[in-house]
Image (cartoon, rainbow, N blue to C red):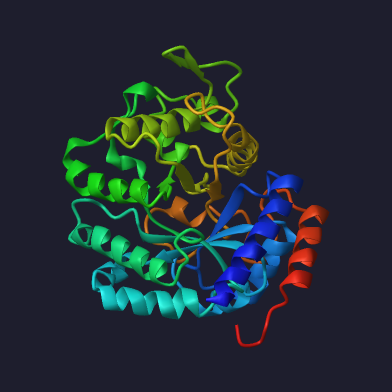
Length: 361
């Protein structure tokens, strides 16, 4: 167990550097999707993260090349369990094997922050029955190696589980999903683990442009659009996140934290899509999440932008293939500031000096 004690000290050291030197870098991550036939290899991708001072990454499955490339990078990782693996991991022994192969084999040279057991599983899907067992089994596998306080095991939901979202204080989960969701969020609260939520103002706006204005969706409204219990809402992102907080309160889990595990805006392919709109949304989101929401002011919101690249093999409507922050040739589509810079270089140098990687890790 000495390796885990060393890693805990390493994480504390680097975490203190990060928190004290650059709060922006400590909050914003980027999702690394791979559904394209023209994308750079994982080694190049991790260098792209580092050169742009992106210090958090969401990986949707335990891609071995990506995990190898992440070794020693000091990038914090959300590691996904693909939905098609949920039934398999409902077996405790298979969950143990999965954690051994994809987490223990890389820890601590890959710094896992969360494991996301499934992504946007519809409660009506046949897979839904396996989400809670897989979640608990992966958690127990992580706990069995003493890492449950460092690696949090959660799930990622979408906002379709919210039945009432307006006004934000009335936010409530749909009645037909409560039997699915309540045991899950109860486990997360017990395990002191945040809920991961994918929040897109784009889809709310494009689905109802009559009632939702573009400035409200892009953070550019000059004044509050709605007032709710004395709280002014100047942007849709805050309203959506606060409706989720309200839903958690009504489910008696008001203490549960939320990590925004996806948010973005497509640059082409649909109503309201453009490079300008995407750049406006992303740059404003990066700035905005440092200050919290009207319901939870002053508390920075850990947020992951979707996605690193345009992915030309993504299924669905055309706009799904235009969420990238970078083109496949690694050229940025937008001028975004993720923080980091020399401060993170200093932290990384100190980390590597104090805890040098060994070849057998």
